[in-house]
Image (cartoon, rainbow, N blue to C red):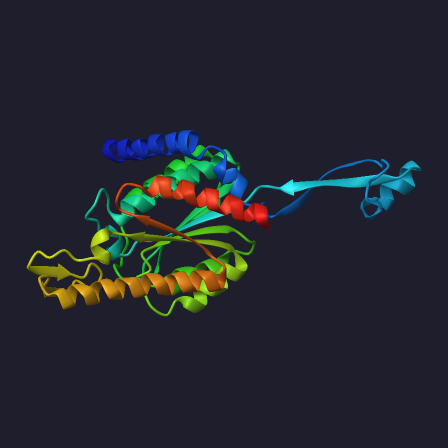
Length: 294
């Protein structure tokens, strides 16, 4: 039995997500993801114009007249939400923390998947595999997923995107849609990233906060690394230091952009400024346009 406070927060996120799916996203989710292939539907009598390659010769021989197999697109998918739950995801100086933004987007995607009759699963990781919820269907399953997204407490605080992606590649036998939520403040994960992109439909969701991009001029500030706990006294009135900080952030962002382009991975940039649902909608629209051009 869930504590009342936890249940209340899960229900609040459920309400917000359902409203976003109904009012904001509509049919966008359904239109941008392809099914896993084609599925057999029926055998029917041959009609002029049918492709002769579709003739079912066994049925034709039994019935004494030509019959063809009819197929439809198999729209059912497996969707995996891969969430980086390391210490840096708790950071946020705007409307929300990065983890809260990830939770709201995960809820919207989960309810979109269920509405579309897709299986939805969850993997939470740091520098180790923290928690896995196997993909299933149904609203009860989504509520369990939301509870885990909101309240699971990881054992570690450091990041290894390689560990998380390598686990996915080991356990996912069939092609899946993978939303990878992270701030991508990590190193040497490029090979695992490219491998996942080859095997699955990978969408990289980069979470950021304005203070990670630009430091304000507020004098001496003590900064603590959210993952290592290391503290550093920084003089933000030093223009050269602020410029170096912004340049480093811009380099990280550009490195991820180049990696995503090279691996043909769609990149969704979201910040803690409260505009993440609008960013998701814009992403779906861009992806739908790109799918139509193929």
